[in-house]
Image 1: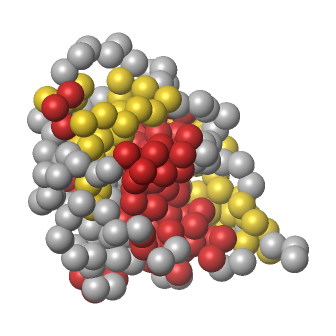
Image 2 (image 1 turned 90 degrees about the vertical axis):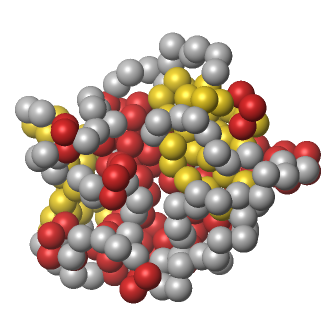
Image 3 (image 1 turned 30 degrees about the vertical axis):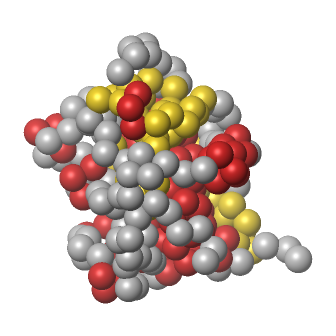
Length: 233
C-alpha cells in the first residue's frame, strides 16, 4: 500500500508479538527514518530503542523524538513521525503514538515516542471502520482531503483541528476548546502536525503540488497555511 492508501486502513495497535524485529528489519526502518521528510525548517532527532529502555511502553520497539521546546518543533515531530507511522503499517507492522510513555534515562529534549512491532491485529476495513467526528465538524467542505484529515489519529481522539478550503489553500486551525482538561500544554501541536501529513498526502494524491507550510500564531491558537497548485508534469 502507498502511504495515502494506508490512511484509510491504519489503526493504533495496542497488542504486539513481543519478539523483537531482526537487525535487517530495524536497519531498514532506521534508514527510512533518517530520510523522512521534515517540515518548517526543523531537524528533529530520532532514535530507535527497545521496550526495556522505556517506562510505560508496551510495543517491543519505539522511536524516540528529541527537539527544542517550540511550536514548530512539536508540529514537525507530528508531521514527520506520522509519515513513519503510515510507512510502518504499510509494510505490515503495528504502531501507536504513546504520549504517556517515556525513556527510563532522562532526556531534557525528549518530546514523544512512536511504538511499533509485529502484530496480528488487522488493519481497518476502510473509512467506515473509524470512529471520528463528522466531516462537517472539522471542515467547511466535504472532499477527499478533508476525509483523509478526518482519519488522522490524535490524543484521546480529540481531533483538535478545523480545516478551511479556499482556492489553492487549505488552512488548518487549532481547535482546542476543552482540550486543556484532558491534554496539558502544547501537546495538541503534535496532532496538528499529524493531520498536516494527511492533508499533504491527500493533496498530492489529487495531483497537487504542495508548498512549504506557513505557521501563524493567533493568541493561544495556531493556524497553518497549506498552499497548493496543480502539478505540472
